[in-house]
Amino acid sequence: MESSDWVNLLNNKILLVDDEKDIGNLLEKVLKKDGFKNILKASSGQEAIQLCKMHRPDAIVLDIMLPDIDGIEVCRKIREFSYCPIMFLPSKNDDIDKILGLSSGGDDYITKPFSPREIVFRITAQLRRQKYDCSDKNNVKQQIHLSNLKIDTDDCRVYKTT
Image (cartoon, rainbow, N blue to C red):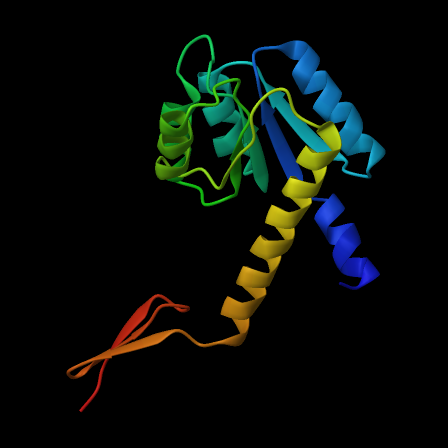
């Protein structure tokens, strides 16, 4: 990865969602120490959804136990309009909770207690993967041919062929 790519990763917006302010503050401090500049914080599910709609974060760290809506439902609602990486950071460690989190649209599941540095590296890995996914899609023209139709998914156009 070139140094300019690394700088671009650090400019991404990260949304931290946890009702425990100490956890949000700790993660914010560690992310800033590693060079991330655009960090948003929410302490409730509704606030997280609003911030996500307004600011379009590039990655989300999401607790499950929130005061208004649980994190699983927040993830589902965010998935209605965003595909940014969502990493769950709950205190629940049961397999069923992990399955629920990942099946609701989550991309990663890290339980408390956690290593703040590990969270930073997982966020970075998700952002790097997202960047590569996007660049691959930009380099390959996505077209589907059906009978006498050609669907160009990149340009969102349908052409009739003869």
